[in-house]
Length: 361
Image (tube, rainbow, N blue to C red; front, side, top):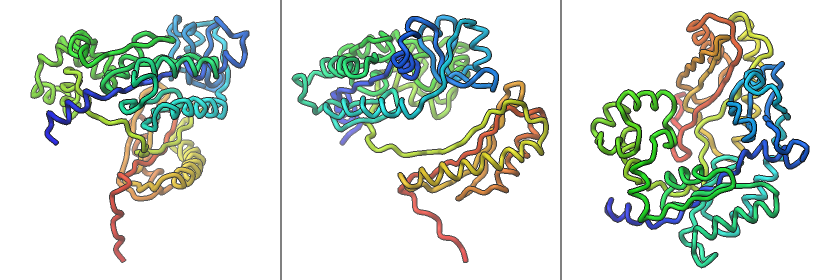
């Protein structure tokens, strides 16, 4: 199949991106109706240096957002109401929502508990209309769960994800193949998944504000300024995304982190805590290995210092090794030589179809 044929075929797809609205927080409000209309954040206690796992729109109005330290969230919103994370409940509800998806297609790519891509190109439901399928799915989620979802409908994953955020909360946007070029021209680059603060700042310095600006910049210059991300940015600037919906999820990494109630003052105290985190990593790895064949290729350590500066260091390795993690931790600590508030240990994995190297005797 030629590149042009592949592109034409991808533009004929009907992709839906379903994204639950403030999922964790919405579940907590559903379970406790007295929280309705009040700013709610799900996460840890501010006294134990917890962070915001999720929050509702009432809290977002005050500047509260996910991954924010809970103590700062209270500074932003003194009337904030917090609830602990009830992960088992969220997983149960997510499973029930995915059962609804399966009534329409088996081409489902879960991204997390609260969002997924659906390829309904071959679905005969609702007369084959992806727009009506998305609408019906959202209605069924609300009828069965009393929770709202937003959806984006488009010819590819990139545009479907952008569209699902367009009319939040409890909204839906459709981008037809005929709409793609005009829609993408005016699309702000900050709406592109993968454009974080650093990339956005660089784009601003280059006067790149929209996808039209990206397209005018051209592939060569985008590669020069943004490296391997440049080609993807250039395709997105034209509304092109040929990635299929992946029904089989492949784990690329696994990690365990711990944020401490009190900063660890020195390297010795970090190494003592590392032993506990390492034990938890082994437990999670064993659990993950039962679901999927995982071949480690690297070990990594993440440290966050008391000034919130974060450093990550890694080494090649084909299995977890406590002493290797201790050496990595020591090297990482020397970069800051400050008290530590968070330690993370992790593994990166090879693709599952890559053969393991033979060990020399």
